Length: 102
Image 1 (tube, helix red, strand yellow):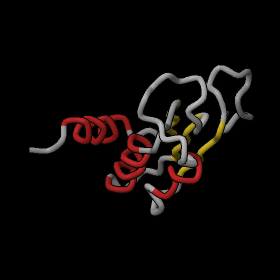
Image 2 (cartoon, helix red, strand yellow; image 1 turned 60 degrees about the horizontal axis):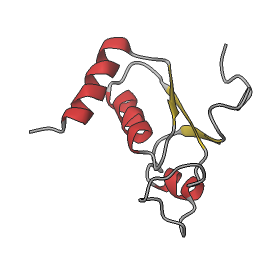
Image 3 (tube, one colour; image 1 turned 180 degrees about the horizontal axis):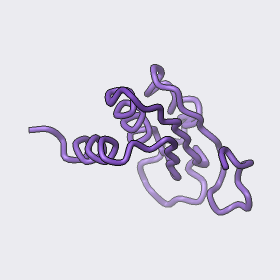
């Protein structure tokens, strides 16, 4: 049986064929790499992927953050073969990044 999470994203991409995808709160890249894989698998449409995240455990009480890991450097290693733009920053800043598209 296939993982429902993966199937859900595949079906969403197949139906909507987004040109851009922004993930807020990337953590280590599981979703954004899956999105890039779906876009590559469903040939015929390009999809630019972007992620904004602080890439540090600051401001989060979750116990699973490793203090010895550079999340900004580690995340792209998880999906080297995909082209994604990762932006370090906090989503509530105004504006956190310059506009990526209009």
